[in-house]
Structure formats: C-alpha cells, structure tokens
Image (cartoon, rainbow, N blue to C red; front, side):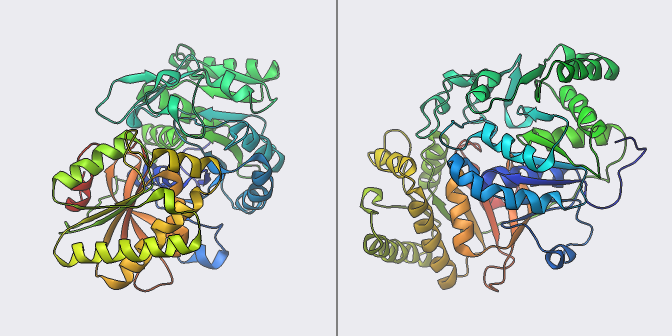
Length: 454
C-alpha cells in the first residue's frame, strides 16, 4: 500500500486462535499508540460505533482446540464478517510456539479456509517475536521456556515437546506445516532480510513465481521486524485485504515499520492502581505457571486445588464449585488473595486427568468450571482484579463470564496485558482481568498484577 501516512479508519482486523494469543496482538497495537478492541464475537456496526477512533479490531476464538471438521463450521462465517470490514490487512493470530497438528488446531487447515475467503496473492507467515523470546532462523523456531530460561529449538523445548495435545517434534516450520496443508511453502531467510527493500521484494517475487503460496519470514532481531512490516504494508490492500498468518510478530512488524516512517502517534500512557488482593484461576499445566503459583503461595496467597479427576459429570462439578467457592470466600474475608487451580506442573498427580480432559475434548468442562467459580466469586465479593491462566482456559472463562469486549488497561508482561472489561453485567463491566498463556510471565507475575505495573 503506497502512502506517505497511515490511512484513516481501520488498519487491521484479526482473529486469534485462542484467547491469550488474542490479547497479545491487542497489546502490541496498544503499546504503539493505536486503539485496539478485542471482541468475543464479530462486532456489529452498533458495537463498533461505541469505540471511537478504533484502529484495529480482533475476535478471540478457540480454533487451536478444534478439529478440522469443527473449523469448517466455526471459521468461515467469522472470516466472512471480518472480510467485510474496511481494513487492508487481516491477521489470523496463532500461538508463537506453533503448537498444532493435522488433527487438532491445524494451522494448515486454517490457511486453506482463510484463503477461500480472502483469496490473497500469497499468505505471509510471521512467527518470531523477539520481545516474546520467540525466534525463527532458517525456518526453524526457537523459544525460551519462560523469560528466565535459555533458548531452545522447539523440538527440544522442555514444555512444547511434551505438550499434552500437540507435542512439537519438528522445529522446521515448513516441514511441520506441510503435514497440514498441500500448499507450497517458501522462506525469506535471515540473510535475505538484511538486504535492501528491492532485494527482499525480488526474493519474494521469485518464490511466488516458483509457485509458493505461503511465505515464512525468519525473525531474529527487531531490524527484521521492520523489514517484514515494510513488506506486509507494501502488499496490503483496502479493496482486497491481505491475509497474513502468525504470532503477534505480525503486529510488532507492522508497528515497527510504521514507527520507522514516523506515522505513529506518541506511545500510549498506561496506568493501573495497586490492589490489596486478587483472585487467580488456573487451568494451565505449564511449569512456568506452576512456578508463579508457587511464588503466590509463598507470598501468602491461599491455594485451592480442585479435584480434577472427579470433574466427570455435572453433579460432581456443582459439588466442586460449591466447596471451592466456600473456601475462596473464607480466604478472601480473612484478607488473603486466592489461587484456584486444576493442575500444578509435571509433578502434579492430577496432570494425567488434565491431559485426558484436553485429549478427550472435555477440557471445556475444566475451563467452564473455573469460570463458574470465578463468576460466583465476583458476584459475592468486591474483587476488581483477576488473573486467568491457560490459553484454552481463558477462552472458556471469558465466555462463561459473559464478556463482550476488552481493551488494554496496562501492560504487565509481554503478551499478557491487564485488560479492562466491557460487559452488559454492571458488576463485571470495568473490571480488570489479565489472561495469560501457560508459558508467559516471570515467576513474580502475580506480584506485578497486585502492583498494577510491570
């Protein structure tokens, strides 16, 4: 898109394949001074009209946990409604660790569905995001296991290679993606990204001439982001939105380029007052989350461990909710913060039950159980700030609560901002919730949430 400044109106629409990934993209835009709003369903014109000056809108989805057949039902109507928006770019936000398989959360099948709707000349794929400790080099993905760890090739990553549903056994994203789509996949590598704009474009055109339909861009440095953003914006089109795929690296690339051109407003000023207490609900089995829960307990939070294996029917669920709510209210009334969880890392004997729930498709029951506990807790207390841990868990909790939309209140840790809630329920409206993926945040994340600052 040739221009000397950013056009008025919407610049970008996006769909997140899980909830925490969606808030990650929203945060990247908000940090750049662009108003972004995240909805749980594609917004109506009247809903959009309530958000003056919005520059990007997103829809938080659940496709990372869906089969291809379920995607065929779920995704096309959402993509069609987003296609109708006057935005030159459409982004399908996927997890920055690319965890997916032909059976569950197929990224390749998502590409096939999106291209039937958008019919872009090619689909750029941007997965690396240096600020999130995700790096793509010669097509291979690397990631830290929490901010304090070293960098691992994804097939040797201590968490992702043992993921309960989509373990990652291949770090070359072209090979991994080739198991999910028949489309040809090319690469603009880290050396080519260091060349001139004209050279990068020539490499891209060479790939397209050769028949490549998806083009993966390496991402190791912030300079790479600027070059990628320039290429994406060059191919953006208001009449036929460019379909892009990737992590929030897409948003970081675009805003890096726009910033280099002087097109962005001054950075947003964020703030959130400290609070004395919070409640945390967690469906994550990640060791990163486990360490954060441990930090909370050592700091005086009251732990409420749900009997995950027993949550097999509605009667057991209701019994669990009543007991957990009683325990949580007792702790809260004594002046304590609360953590309710279904699993605490690899050594927790409940891990197999949690894995089975995810594999059998009943992970929804765990997420909705946590959502119902939180919903009743909110109704019976004056809590104003909440943490929800786990990507799939966050989506189920948000829907159980009846959230309509979210905006960034303040960044706390990269990829998981503290969000302000919009909801028809007056008690919920205006609350602050941080939704975090299992791998996100330092060990003292809960302390940062209490303080309202990074």
